[in-house]
Image (tube, rainbow, N blue to C red; front, side, top):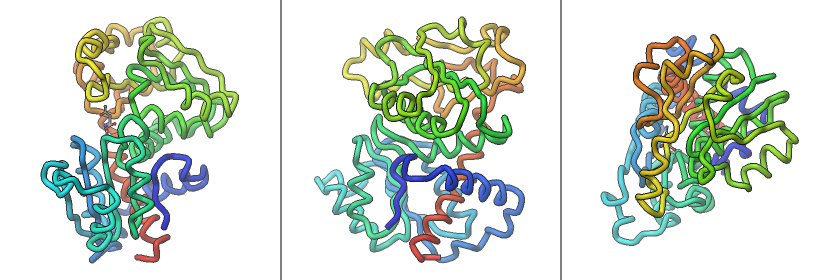
Length: 307
Ligand code: NCD
């Protein structure tokens, strides 16, 4: 049974094909409005979420399917001590496909090993978030026309930010990319991500602590929130949380066609005054995420023989 736990589970041609399907859904939504009739998606979210859960659910409805849902560990048998394995074996009896978010790294892999229907990782702790990456890729392709020769800045919590890890894993597979990793010393990209992505593909990258000195070089600026829930103590979070705040003033040095991205939710990382700048793409990412999740649900249900 094919599940998607992280970006390496999809080949480059498959990533491109998912983007093509999403573009087709955008052009001809009516052709997809009934394709998942009588099929059920289960959303199991054991960590807070607004966009990811609702976009999975909206995606399934737009394909004509139905949704069953558990929101919050407190509301399910997890609160009684049930294991992830038993939960997904149970949910496999009710649903054709599962999207799961869990606070523990690796939980999605355990789910995929035990489910009898496809599992999509909707975020596992500080590890990976492949469907956010699908949203990010479509946004970059639509804004920049492709993935060659881009200088990508990633800024903020690069240590705990799972969206950063999955996006790096995807972008490292395209050619002629350069990366500028902007973070406080304490929140640098984990070494396993560097060795699996950047070093393995011998891609040029620099690590800096200052955003303003590099902003003018960037084609993409991917801002992220400091991941409060993954810190061991509140003092460190408070000290680091406002390390980077993007303002119209800082953007004066940026390229005219910079693409400003953020997986959201934003706390203080981007001033709301930036929202009206034509370079702000973060709400486009939200919309693109729904279309990419539609494309992924379709692909996995077809491969499982359900459609
Ligand atoms: C991200 C996540 O959950 O990792 N949010 C999202 O799904 N769009 C980013 C975050 O929470 O900071």
